[in-house]
Length: 486
Image (cartoon, rainbow, N blue to C red; front, side, top):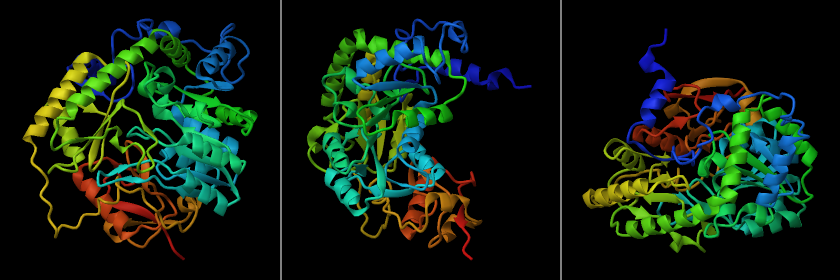
């Protein structure tokens, strides 16, 4: 029998009553002023009974609800997603490519995009984000790089770009869309972190306004909605909507949650009303926080001075990205200190920076605590002393997205015969597994790619830092599956 103190619901309740503040998704931030219509979710939890329509064949209340949502966002058609943005990305990939076809995707795509490449037996061509100076943070995707790739390979069927990134970096989607359209290719934008753009005039413009054909957004990431809720928008005539719908029927649950669907609708309704004013107040608080954090001498706040360089077309101010590049600690250490000493739980840490997600659900208390913690820590930190004899490979990793040596497709790498070797002895072999840090779930190496010395050293350094290296079958992280050569 599971002990009472070990039950998930007990631990969730205890945590929600603690003083840990969430600088992570979901965007409602456990704010008691939001979600007041959900005192007992069981009251709303039904199945496809008479009068409540069917998400996979909407003709009534759900059809009207999604048509209304499309009008709010400016889409030709909008679909509610109850399996997160991941199912939307999968449906978009399958709906725009043929089995065994080709896709051009930014290398910093989420693992769900790579799963789509695997499942549809696709050949993936990559376009790479720029690198922001020495900060270890990826910049944007250049339209000319997309142009070069499309010009080089006429067999590419669709383009998939992430914007904004986990760090809030926005690429020039309007020019990338024009480029893709010149070649007759649809542009899919993973805008999972940008569902709030449509409701704040001080935030970047949504990809949906800028010419993208398919846009996927996680309403739960930055807006007051339940975890796992998302949207897929379609606009224009380059995409076959029936194909998208067919694959949504495959990748979404056949028993979609009415609590989730009501939550999506309620979230959009709130944001299209009083939420717009809340976004203005939220932006004012953000500006105040950012101004205060400019006092830091050792920690470094990523801000708008980088716009116009490194492929950065715009930036989402709600992502508070703090670089440790000038200090003697790692991003993982900063994340741990903020959690243990200040009870601030951030969204993500990398080798050289941390990310705090702020959202319209945040409270003044949280902003004050984050500001005081970072300013206090900044005074205590020492500057990094460079050791010319210390060779680190971390100028790869989060600093530079891998430019892999592809030996075979992801499908071939996953399904081919395997053998297990230690990480240290894997150099020169072809990976049969994904290896990534989660979050954000961007591969260091994908199946079918050569395990270069730099990649193997990076995996080892990440593990030593205590970062969450995932994807390996061996949960201890000591071995990796590689493709067995004849």
